[in-house]
Image 1 (tube, helix red, strand yellow):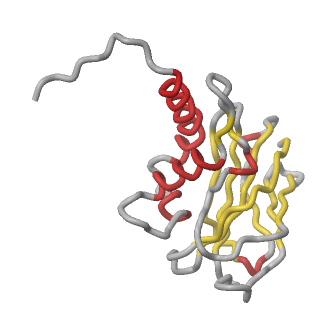
Image 2 (cartoon, one colour):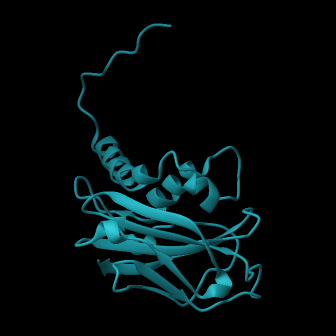
Length: 183
C-alpha cells in the first residue's frame, strides 16, 4: 500500500466543527480511559461497540453544544451510565465537612427491574483540571446514600453524577446529574 498523503486544501467548516466536538468530548472521557469504567456502566451490548465508545457516542449526541469554535458540554445532559433499568427521580449530592461528596437518593427498588442490591455508580469531574474521580461502589440502591472521596479536588468546582448497575453487571440505569459543587 502506498503511504497516505496529507491534503493541502483547507478543512471544511463542517469538518472543523466535528473535530472540535471530538476534542471537547475526549477531554471529558480521557480520565476514564483504560479503567474499564464505561464497559461496566454501559453494559448493554448492541454490536461490537465498547462501553467507552458507547459513552463517547452518548456524549456527542446528547451533551455537546455550541458552534465552532465555541463548543462546550452541557453537564446535565452527560450520561455516565446507560441502560434499561429505571433511573432515579430524586437524587442530590452535597459536600461533607471532610470535602467528600455525599450522594443521597430515594430507593426506588421494585419499580421495573430496579433492585435493592443494585450498585451505585459515582462520578465527580473537575472541568478546570480535566480530572475525574469515579467508582462503581459497594453502596447499594437500598443504602440511599453513598460517599465518594473527593478531597483531592479541594478548592475546585466539580460536576457530579450518580447511576446504578445491576448486581450481576448485565444492566444499568441512565445516570442522573446531581449538580455543580464547590469543594
